[in-house]
Amino acid sequence: MDIVKEILDKQQQTLQKYKPITVQKSLDPTIDAGHLLVSDPNYFDDEQMKADREKYVLDLTRDNVQLLINDVWQLPTERVDESIVAKLPPPKTLLPRSRKLPVPKPLTKWEEFAKKKGIKKRTREKKVFDPVLDKWVPTYGYQRYKAEKERDWALDVPQNDPYRDMFKEKRDLRIERVAKNEVARMKNIARAKKIAVPRTGFVGPESASAKQLITASNIVKASTASVGVFQESLPNEKQARGIGVKELLPGVNRKKKTSSMAGEKRRNMEIVTKVLNKKPKIDIDRAISLQKAEARAEREADEGVAADGKKSKKGGKKSKASFSRKKPKGGQGKRNHSKRTVGRKRR
Image (tube, rainbow, N blue to C red; front, side, top):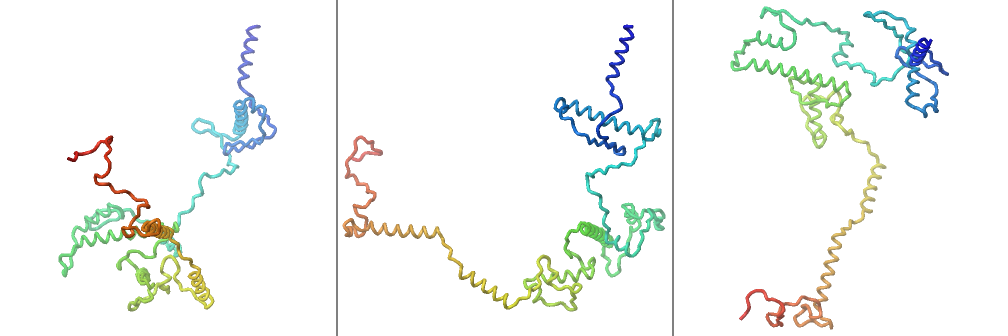
């Protein structure tokens, strides 16, 4: 009997390690199986929290996880790779995004025009047959350039200019075409990001359109000191789509403002009042310098007069009563024997 009792006690101790799967709460928590989320609306027990915070939070978390697992076990299941998995329902809770919603990519100028005109994009073949090379060559990429270089190994030279480099002209046209495409790409990016760019830049007559040339001409005309008022007009000159010279200037609007008699009178009165009420500027350093100079002149004049009001014998020089440094007497003074003489003795 002792052995049976011991076994039963041991089994009871083992069962005490595992808590039951049933959880009782005052308010039922909200379970969102789609997000595997549990929201517990019950209040905290302050006494248990103060007694042992870590144990209380651990028990509370275990109870909520147990409720979530009980709900998951009630979902339909299926077998995937010899494993049984549960089919989660669509989530109910709306979670905030960590980043903003992606905006659609803005259309380029050509895409807007194609959409307006109903032009559909046609798929290009990756390779086409070249009858000159008698092989299939790619339609784009560096392999196409190599095929063109292999095909055009010789070019015709005009008879009137036998020293003309046709290979250099072909290479320059290709570089210019690449640069033009890059400028168009940068303009598309600037327009999509709403960045202000100058209306015209450094454009040549071959790559610029008539509108760009007219706009550039008007801007250059307005770059003078008179804002193009006294600038001579070119023969058959046109304005950029009816826009005047002043409106093409960037920055402040240069349009002349209308003035009235009352406004003109008010501005003149403001100028007169400002001039009349203007106080002279006092230079403190200069005033101090003048005061010092006057005091020095008075002191020198007083030193030139004797104490009794008469001039000195030396004609206005410093008197004996005034303070002055005494000149050394050339050997007429008394010799101080206690003081050591410096230098050679006189004989």
